[in-house]
Image (cartoon, rainbow, N blue to C red; front, side, top):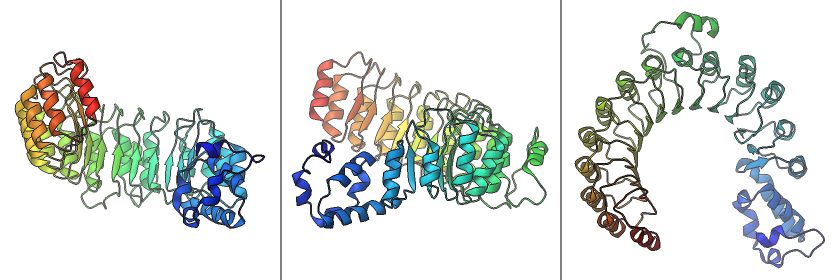
Length: 444
């Protein structure tokens, strides 16, 4: 491809193009090319047969390509060749008029790389022009409730909404999502710091709630009081919910929302400072199908929360208890290992109560572990690493930084037994010599 990028219309086409089998031009290889590379290929095709095959392949990209649209000329070039991309990832300097002009039928739109704050006019044009969206990722901007309502009304097939870090997202907007997006399966509102428990309650309201004429009235009705869970309401289709850094969310919000989210598989509650054991117990009680759970920096949780996870979430694949020092003990880790044997990724950074005992039980039961972070677990020694290396042969990423009791012996045993290990962090492990690190990276 490097030779191809040096090609210009005035120079002879690269020799390899004439040798390409026809089947290559019929396959999905072009989905891996950038727009610039496709443009150069377009110029380089001299055989009419190859050119027709190439143009046919280009037109099929409407279903597979996820492409940066930053340049008006590139957008016009694609449009002139009958390419109507449906999966768009807009670059930092995107002009939304390019999207709305050439790709109004887009189904996937990712604007997260957009470097500028989206003004009200840009968002209004987007909301009124794109009517086929199923997946949208919006950056921060002048997102108001009326524009959000327009966007959701015009795109009834939306199933994935990411408004992470959108500072103007409100509780009422969550109510609009619950009322206007019946197929919502993915929602990321991380860093939306204005969201409260009332927003989660509004999200949980059925779209056909007959007693409430308007979600604004609903907001006033629920403010300040706890609504008991209504077990008769139909479940929401939510499969993934990200609430990280929503500091105003408490146990109350989870009690209001989660009874309708029984299909939830991924839940991120990281940095939700108001979360306590009751909320975590409710999450595990209502969402027994959880496969991914993040509780990063949830300081108020005690070890009873981990026992609840262990007894109610047998399908768990990934758990992040980063800096949850009261939640994670040898006893609760042992319970987790016994109840969640399918675990593949576990982050126990700074869980200082975990010793070789807990690590040993974890290793014996969770043999499918691939990623493990025990950084700053200062009680871990070579003995624990030995047990880990004997049972967890699928490990490929291990963070041991600040584990001052491990030595070169533990590192060597891991290197010998865990042949898939590609990443090991031993930063500030005072008893591990640089020579051992060199040997590890040489072997990998």
